Structure formats: structure tokens, C-alpha cells
Image (cartoon, rainbow over all chains, first blue to last red; front, side):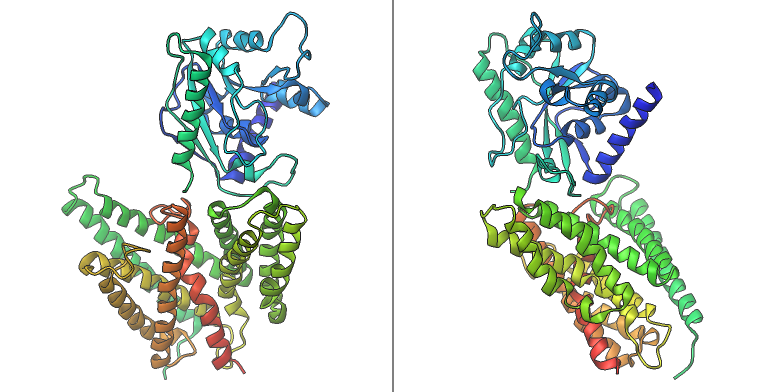
Length: 213
Length: 317
């Protein structure tokens, strides 16, 4: 079973690489074996797979995507993929949808405490608007505040929203790039809003770097 | 006129291409160890990676030609697919373009090359200018997204014309029936590709050695008058010297070489203007030292259809 899961994982990463011609650009840091929270812009289902595919395989097995339980908890195939193959951390996005006593933050902190890195999309949902980046939810701040030793790495995914827009099933073979920025942390007593602005700006700066005018 | 068999032609051409590439490799190697003294040197290293990529490109084109009609069609279909991919990546687009783009990649490109294979000239020559032209905006309008509609429809059609319609005229050269030239059409492809690419290489070399006055400073700052004149003149001489693989006389061969190198030059300029407007240096990263497929084929895209029609008009009954 483990072998099958690995084979499917390899299949997903290879397919994603092939379709997107993805180029990983390590701009602000290298692919080091540090515990990290990768936070990126979310425009497509392929987002995880692409971040995942551009990590070296030894880092990939220690990096878990954070996904919405309301979407991924439905259906046997989705459940299998997210639990066994992608090793996702499922969190409830609907208010009141979570099992009593365990908040989304607790689940994420538990994953970090187990030594894994996380991939999160602080916009909370896939961006289908004309806005380049939606406002951030506070989860990123809470994580960073509770586990200040973990590096936060901004990841800008360029063009992926056009490859597989929300609701489409046939991917467009456009060239994508995945841009890793400079790791950041919460500065001392930095208020939540200030930090979230700074994190969002870090992604926007990467976007400017990655895309043509 | 002396008589040489196609087999001997092939042998002579192969020897010529391998000779030129070997010479380029030796020169690049010598420059690396005399001028650059083994240290990193941007111009010389770029030259060497270009030469290396040329070996690969020559090998791929050679293998495709060796594989015959299907090989050549498959190679250029792949080139069109990659070129359209590079184009669509850079072109501005919206979510509503998803289905027209999907159809372009997975239906229009394969079907255009299928028409080359069928040798159905009538449909080949109007499939993209007429049918794709009308159907693509229909697919786009189905998305009900009207923003920048005219630009989006025009951008896609232009991309299909350049990357697919124009480029498919290269393998279409195999379908021309030229009296007294039967079984040798592949040499027309060799002639076109060699002359246009040699012109690019000569322009680069002349420009690097003697370039002073910029010919289009706002569009392509690396192109110079000296490079243009020297490059085109050298390519015309090369084209004239290649007359023996064509149905042309040496004078006709020189004239045709002049036409296609000038078209190729403007092709490079037009495609540079797009890159400049979109703020990118290269179309892609597929070919080391050259950039993307479109960086290498921009001049061929512009010269292939005219070359095809010149040959078709004057050399076929």
C-alpha cells in the first residue's frame, strides 16, 4: 500500500511538472531541510501538487499540504488522495463544522510539533476574482506566533490559475513558474494586522518579480 | 549541369553541417581557453551553449528527415505545440479563454498537421485563417466574459497564425509536386532551415565582431546595421552555394535566399517587439543558450509561408 501511495505521489508530481513545465526558482532561500511553513497564492487545485513537485524528494515526504475538510472529506477518491498520498492536514473551514474541542489551529500546531513542514494558502480559498491576491485569513499569524522558530516562506505560483481554473477539468499546457521568497517570522510584538500585511506584501513583491509587466 | 544522386546530396550536406558545427565547437573551445582562460565569460559561454544546442537541433532535424514525412510532420507539430505554449504563456488572457485555448492546443495544432499529412492543400491553407478564425471567438463568447474581448480574440488568432499556420508550411514543402525534383523535397526544408538559421548566426557573428550602429534600438538593441548587412550578404552567398540541392538556378537561389533572410530578419524583430511589450527577455527556456523554441523559430515562422508559395507558384505546374 505504501508503495502504491508513493507511486501515485510520484505520478502526480511528474504529471504536474510535465503539464506546467514548472520551473522552481529559489529566489530568497534554498531548498534546505528546515522546518517551514510555505504560504502561497491559491488559484488552482494543482497548487499543492506544484509546490510539492518542486521540493526535493527528501523534503517532500516531510511537507504536508493544509486542505479544506469540507472539500477533501467528500468522496472516497478525494479522501484517499488527501490522506494517504498527499498526507494532507485537513481543517474545517465552515464555522461550527469542526469537531468539538479541537480547533483548526490545534491540528496545524500538532502537525508542526510532529516535525513536519506545512503548505498553506492564507487566502483561505481559491482566488477566482480579478484581484491578484485576496486578503489573508489570520491562521498564518496564529501559527507564526505560536511557533516562532518555524520559518515562513512566501511562494508565488505564476500562471497556475490559468492552467486549471476553478471548475475546469482539462488543464491548459501553459508554462508556470514557482517562486520561493525570503523566509520571514513575526517580529516580537508585531500586531496581527501589520504582520499579515507584511506577509501579503512579500507575496506581491515576488509576483512582481515573477511576472512580466 | 552535373548529376548527383539524392544519396550523395545527403552525404555532402551531412558532411557540410558536421564540418561547420565542428569548426564552431573548436573555435568556441579555443576562445574559452585563450580569451576567457577557462574562467566564466558571458559571451563565450553563451556562444558555447548555443553551439552545443545547435548540435542537438541538427541531430533532431536530421533524424526527423531520416524518418521521412511522418517524422518531419511530428517534429514540426511538436514545435508548433511548444511555440503556442510559449506564446499563450506570455499573452494576456482571462478565464473565459480556457476553452478556446484548450481547443487550439489539442485540436487545431494536431489537425493542421494532419492536413499536411493528408496533403489536402485546399483545407490546409484555409483551416486556421477561416475555420479557426470563426470558431475560436464562438468558444470564447460562450464564456460570457466580454472584457477586452476584441484583444483576446485577436491575440489568440495571431498566435495560431504564427506558431501553427506559418510553421506548418515547413513540412508542407514535402507535399509540392515539382517536375524533375521528385523524391528530393526534403532538401527544400534543409535549404530553408539552413539559409534562415545561417542568416541568424551570421548576423550574430557579424554584429559581435563589427556591430556599431543599432538598426532598431527600441525594439532589439542587439541588432546592428553591420550585423544585418553582413549576415544577410553571407546567407545569400550560402544560399546561392546551396543551389545544387534545390530546383533553382544559382541566381534564383541567391534571390530566394535574399527574400527569406529579409523576412526572417523582420520576423525576429516583430517577435522581439512582443517580448519587449510583455517585459520578457526570452520566450522560454527549452533550448539552452537560445531561450525558447520561438526564439529560435521566429525567423522561420515568417519566411516559411512565403518560401512555400514562391516555390509553389513558380515551380509547380
